[in-house]
Amino acid sequence: MSKLVFETVRRAPPLAEQIYTTLRQQLRRGAFSMGERLGDAALAKTLAVSRAPVREALSRLVADGLLETGKGGFQIPVPTVKSMEEVFDVRSLLEPPAASRAAQALTPSAEAALDEALKAARNAVAQGDEAGFLAANYLFRSAWIDCVPNLRLRDTILRFDDQAGLVRRATLVLPAAREEALQLLEQWTEAFHRRDSRAAGDFALAFITAASRYFRELAEREEVFRSVTSVPSA
Image 1 (tube, rainbow, N blue to C red):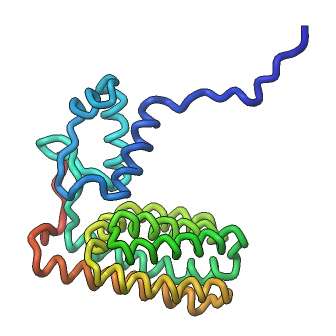
Image 2: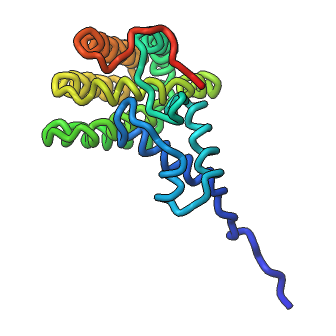
């Protein structure tokens, strides 16, 4: 009897992992509104699973900063001005030097990914597609961050990425914000293609500065953002 070969056999990811991945993708795409509640019982019923893996997935999303807990259960965070200012500060310190290093380490596949993301961003702006532009923005970020040679620096940036995503979902609904972001993406892509590390770092900072400006403008005229300095927890 010949020996069986099991190299291609793979065990399916645990149910909680599958639910976590699915919800995380939807949250990053802005499928839910800020402040919207997510009930574990309702989600379990929709997914036709027990509540245990759903609660495990939701708890992981809380740790990621994509959800928060309160008396009513789980809900989409409403960013506080204080917390987002801290995130902008961290990003301003980390991302410009990371982008500079990524420009020198950019691979051909990453260049192609940047071009595809830029093309998608242009189409999204032309069509007024908010979700499409948000998705293109994530693709662009993923392409250059993957080229950061310092793995610890890369992981630290990604640790704040989902929290920064709260701002992206809030600000990129504005046509003016998408137009300005597209202009910066155009220039940023050219800098990456030139392997211009200084310019790549400068555009990284310009992108963060623009996002911070739009966030503050929204916070000043809308009550959707909290002005308190902490997020309530259970």
